[in-house]
Image (cartoon, rainbow, N blue to C red; front, side):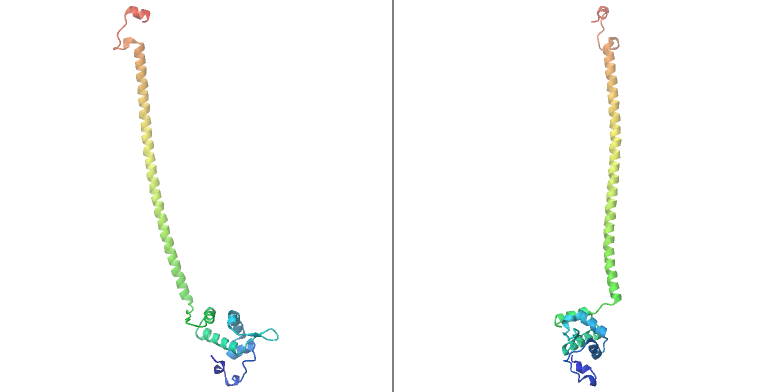
Length: 199
């Protein structure tokens, strides 16, 4: 881009190699000094500049041309500073900037991401719910088995207790029968003298 092509008749004769301040550059390219300062702050390394005797940045022909290029990319093509920085960093070769996303597109993308995340969370929640139901069914079945076992154990204990009682009663009967031969029909009866002597 040639700055002289875009300037009026009265600015064509200006010597662009002497060095101009921010205000003068802003005047040449019809921007405000604050815009020029911001562009310089963002893209300092790509804008040729020198320090004058007072320590201020001044811009010669190459710097002014670069500001004009930034202006064209930013204002006319709607490039962001990041895109322009990438363009200068790569020498402008085969770079097509992504158009800046509008607020609606950004919100739509965020909503889509949130929906996807919500779907994943719902799926995980369903898996947890299924797992809890399975665990609950297992616990229920386990409790039923324990109750059956306890009932069976009580019944076995009752049967065992009854059998022990019956065995004790049988022992008592046997012992009583042994002590009293008259009540035992299988034992031969002792005679009078044997009973008297105790044999």
